[in-house]
Image (tube, rainbow, N blue to C red; front, top):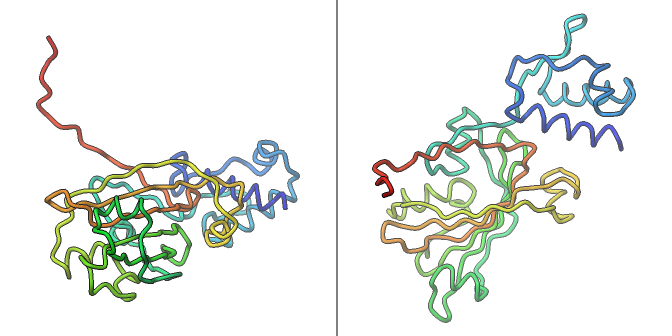
Length: 240
């Protein structure tokens, strides 16, 4: 339906850095022209966004941004759980799969496993304030983390690694590419198959630079937006 597509587009704009909470949206007539729809269709869009708590419509005064589903600024490596809690939000996870596996050659190489070593595989849907934000697939060595349980994966993987296993996470390698979701993923994240997502491959390492995990994250970019600040290393020598 047309109004569903316009709802996604306008929601993405509201959740983008273009707007702040308290800002006034353009008038209904202006928005209708901008999106090429009738005033009636636009009103359905605004009603849906109002029901989601993103906007507030005041008769005679206009439409205001009431809330953003999620935006955060990150200045160092934080877990999904930490990012949500730092913004005063409630994170949660739904475990879709949790099992022992024989790893693929790629996963075995990434985790530097010996022949015959198995891995724990977890597939979980991540929520913030009950809104689906991200689907994560992660692999960890069963030899290194023999006590990993479903309960650990329902909360914070980083908390398990650091607080229970006593392994300090030194940092994380990340590579990011745009992608289109599969039918299953679109359904889980409640988006269209034509809506782009962010696909991120990550690998945390310990202080000895040994791999800790290997993960693939699929992020709903309409709902989960994170702005990163990366400090520049001081002391660059001038070029001759």
